[in-house]
Image 1 (tube, one colour):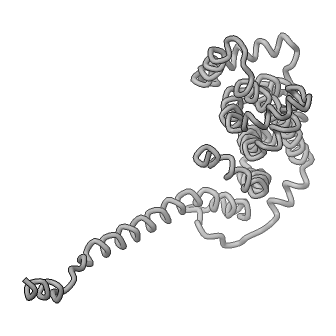
Image 2: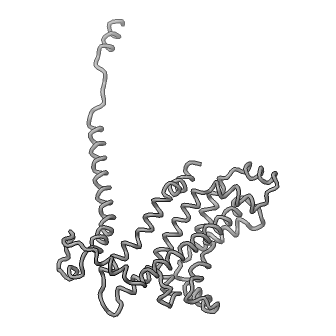
Image 3: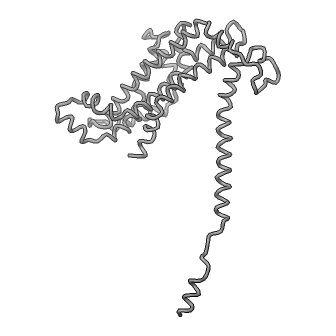
Length: 294
């Protein structure tokens, strides 16, 4: 018995074969390569836009159009800044974005706090009804919305682009889900101190839900800055055009093909989006991962 035990102890230790490890390495390499290809595919349109904005108009008529820039020039941007209507369109878009982001973030967070923390009759049914409106395509209500805005004499103003979406379903849902994570003890302590419901929302809840506010602000800013259909339907005067609407008009202005100006304007219109995302990236990621951490 002792000899048998010593024989077992002296036997070599079993080691796993190297095949599974090599297979995992190959799979990881293939996955990394596939992700690099997907990333390049997503970056290719942006690369093409930047290169085309630096390409002189004469090269647009060359066939095939070279993928690598040969004669870079900044004349397209110079021509763009010389046009007063481009600067006006950019300022109009900035003003519209500030107004939309401010109003929607405030009212959506207020409604989200109401649905999350206040008890009133019909709360759940009303919230389900609000969520049901998200299933209706936005184009379905465009004609009725236009009729209402024309009767209110709001056509060719920014009110049709701001007022209907002040308290939208997505924003209310987003803020409600985040407000539910605010501890009830914190709100009860504020009530004991004599703070009203709006005071609790303004002084206690808003500082806690800053990541969700930043995330919602980014979503609203992106949708407003890139919106084309809304300004196309409700705006008439060129002085009120947004930058996206201006780019579509200048591309066919006076029946002259001007792709170099369109590409230069597209690059400039992408810069505020990158700046805002880089500034609020920390809050944005915190807002996205809050649901999985709480």
